[in-house]
Amino acid sequence: DTEVTQTPKHLVMGMTNKKSLKCEQHMGHRAMYWYKQKAKKPPELMFVYSYEKLSINESVPSRFSPECPNSSLLNLHLHALQPEDSALYLCASSQDPLLAKNIQYFGAGTRLSVL
Amino acid sequence: SQQGEEDPQALSIQEGENATMNCSYKTSINNLQWYRQNSGRGLVHLILIRSNEREKHSGRLRVTLDTSKKSSSLLITASRAADTASYFCATVSNTGNQFYFGTGTSLTVIP
Image (tube, rainbow over all chains, first blue to last red; front, side, top):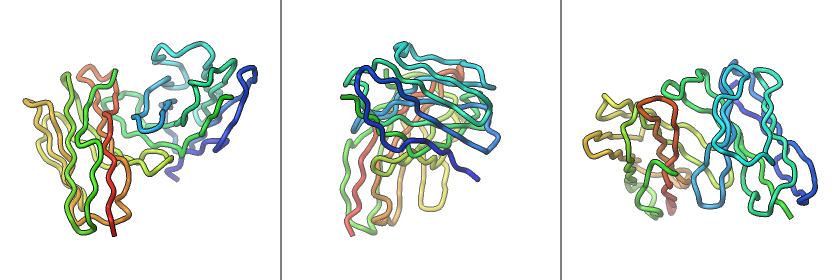
């Protein structure tokens, strides 16, 4: 099973809402990632979890709060988002947390619209 | 900021033709990877080339790496309509703690 599953596929939320994005992998990978991708742009790394601990935070605003409950799950909690946060949010995982050794497996993404 | 710049930004070819896209990057790398993304979907890893390698092949894909010029190219031979997608290079820094995608090339293969 080489699949990374993201839910929901689509999400519409208001600026005062609280919502969560979920990501799951059962490949035994020890690193998981959140990316943000705007239309016609490359993905931008947001967070990296290594062995369930946050190892990289690319200066992401606090309205995005990641959580890694266990080695298979990764959540992204959203609160008080802005319309410019509308984007495709991608989750990825890799076998080895060392970036130099990894190939990343991506989920299909959550299309987020903030109204 | 992005590590890699790709050109062309967009490429349109006929089925059966070869497609070449280029990636230039700024700092020393440990490895360079190529990914494909179908419209609105996740990315799929295609190939990884290490800094001490000059060329790699995988099926219809050929990747070259020139570390002196800080550039890489991806060649897709005998293209198919199903190759229509965006292609991104991604670099892993020499220190191993930075990972950046390039700006991407949008490839359209016309049947």
